[in-house]
Length: 409
Image (tube, rainbow, N blue to C red):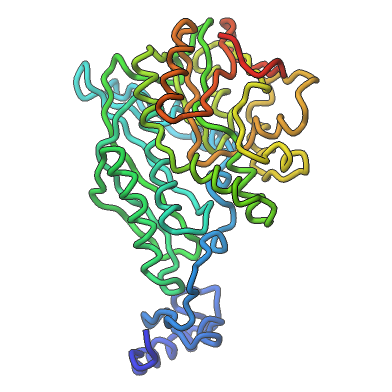
């Protein structure tokens, strides 16, 4: 806005009330006049916006966040403690709910047709608004794909400092999200927004799945092969980017991975009889696998040498470039995980790295694994790989060995 657009009388009334109260009426933590008023002659409480001449020509979204992407999630251990205090949901139509820690809730519409619902919101991992919107949509849709479902509709959820940054930035975030929803065959039907100091965006997604195609955490069986459809390392590269250590080519590879839908992977796994699936996001590979083996009552063996990785991530991990989310993720699965001494520390860090818009971790019959993997690679998922197998019935265990470059089903 220009200075001539200011309603001086409105500003006077609002600021007079603030000064009388002893603090800003919009934010009781601030005095009046607030730092923004002193620096940029702007009173947010009077409905004023930072003038265009002060708005950055190229907004760096990651400067407006504390923890980037899915690394900002509440830890599994803390979340489980919170959810354990809630009353159980006993409606027989709820086929998958809070208790199993699946990627989405599942509600029975008819004996053969199920409703899939999920929500995901996080902070930017890239600076470009349009790209961030695409990543946010891919990440939100992934939970429906992980259940074997097809997304139909979405509601946007955004937090944005509208008085500080140009509204055009928020438009670009939503436009990016809508482009991915269109690619997925889903539509944006509404949403909700908050005036927030920290940028956040995501979507609540509703989809459908046929009962015989439902893939839940509880379906893994001994003899299954484990396929991971995207490379690991987005959390490490996000932090390396913030520290100015990631190369342009590595950043591009991470962005390509995060903006790739899990749609084709979900369709292929369904055709090959996948029994269980989860998407690998903020809890890291072992965090999400831990829930799968517990719910399925099995032991999984992961071959660390077979993990698909983004460029540079091993070097960054060896240099200690990984976030505090690693420690939180490791804490959750530590009691059931055995890592062989031959697995290097850098590869161990990748096991717990908080992924943003990561791939699907799929358990499917071993005799279908190679064919499914070939289809995925033909569909453009070039780094999809068999990373392990389900070995036996148990109370839920994970073994990690170094082994070779391919995990045999």
